[in-house]
Amino acid sequence: MVKKRGLNRGLEALLQGAGSLDVDLNQASGESTDELQHLPVEWLQRGVYQPRRDLDPEALEELAASVRQHGIMQPIVVRSIGVNRYEIIAGERRWRAAQLAELPNVPALVKDVPDESAIAMALIENIQREDLNAMEEAMALHRLQDEFSLTQQQVADAVGKSRSAIANLLRLLQLQEPVRLMLERGDLEMGHARSLLALEADDQQQAAREVVAKGLSVRQTEELVRRSQQPKAEKAKPSGDADVLRLQEHLSDSLGTKVAIRQNAKGKGQLTIAYASLDQLDGILLRLDAQHDKY
Image (cartoon, rainbow, N blue to C red; front, side, top):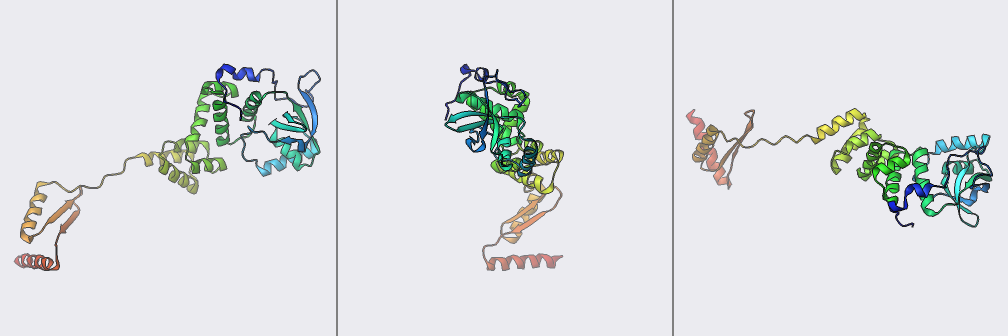
């Protein structure tokens, strides 16, 4: 693997001379230092730094249908990595659609770039142009930041986004893995995920499951998070009222055993009479009967 680059190498310097990735067949000319070729589809392979993990089969079929009818209008950007072997820098979806359409060859713009430039180009191109989900984009941004030791502002400048947008996406990496998978599958939206970040691990997963099960909106999720963060009501403590304490002491003396009275703020409570044996219990019951007969 390529070693991590520092800022002294300069991300901008790596991209200089690489040229634009946004080239169509009509723009490609002999004046360019890049070479436009028609390469057999089997000579191409997936880029190592492709952030997308899954391609929508339905969308890919639609693209394949378009390719069958119109061909590939924008060349795939590649670099040579050996004899008859090319790594895709940009255009994996077009390459896969060409395979589904059973095209023997694809137009490819062959760039002569080192590993560092290929990494930067692939990450930035995919972040800017591919239809990544929020988690895929967050992982690609983190990889770009990590590979080149960039600040969030430098990442933002490189991909044409605001620093706050970059910060919000990178925070998604703090989600618990089950919640990240829900976001990646599309069960949760980014707004849901940002709200859930305020919760601890167990509460986060439980709330995420509730959001999905009930189909909660982002606003409803925010309310759910607020409720989850509220401190739980404390249990009622034994009453310290002087009259209750005197009554408790009187009953203990009368029955000859330990008596506890617990009372909450609403006046409801429990009277507990302790006994150590059945004989003692019989004695307590006799005393209670005697007290009852007095009244």
